[in-house]
Length: 98
Image 1 (cartoon, rainbow, N blue to C red):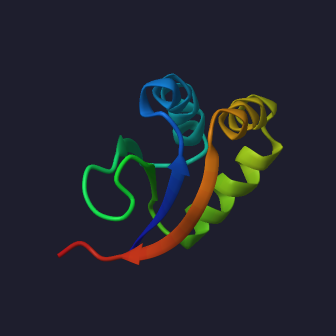
Image 2: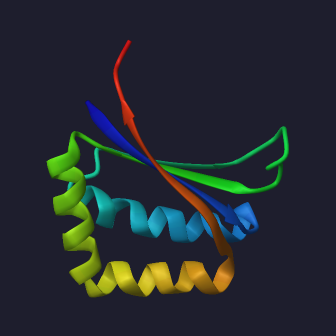
């Protein structure tokens, strides 16, 4: 079963997109199978930016998070993201292909 980390950011999507494009290959290098980002268009979170990062399983998620935390390039880009916007929520979902 895939593990999906979904984060909600209060940020301007046009400003956040270059950072998302910069961090995606770093996450993939550490084991993420996909990285997606986009603005929410409806509901209570309209205007917020959502990022979904998929990992193959719990072991892959754990390895990737440990590796990213130790990666200076990842830490630099993530620090820039925290200056640009506010991380408001993060959920970790165990998903099953239907």
